[in-house]
Image (cartoon, rainbow, N blue to C red; front, side):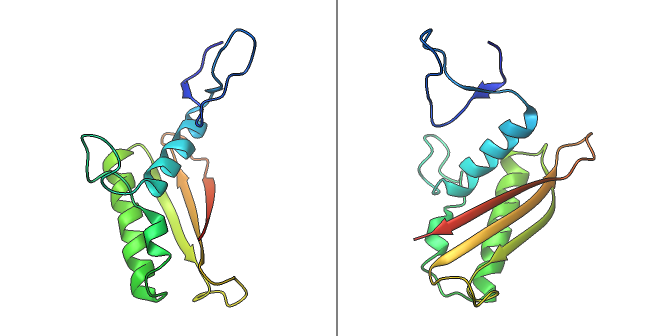
Amino acid sequence: MSGLAAKLPLTITSAKEVYSLLQTIEQVAAQNIKMIVFTNPGERVMDADFGVGIKRFLFKQNVIQTHDALRSRIQNQINKYLPYVKIERLLIDSPQTNPELPENYMKVLLRYRIPPSSKSLVLELPITA
């Protein structure tokens, strides 16, 4: 079985003890974006700047300035570590922007593409305390 990268978390798929693999560049990009967004700066060995640390933003004041800081951090991290991903749109949804959402809830909606493909991909990341 061939693939581009191991699917995380690692799981064995058969009696041959083969790990699940990601088969497309789109799957690899989505997994890499999730790793950047959910990793806290300082957690990655040998690269203290890697990661957004999105859960830290949950307990900051829920104001537009916090959303802007989060948006900026996500864009900078993706531009630095995943230069092959081109962000088309990045939305932050929270009780500040949508009163129907529960407290301490945040959702990141990322629309991106991987050139030379013109296909837009969407990744929705719900973040809760």
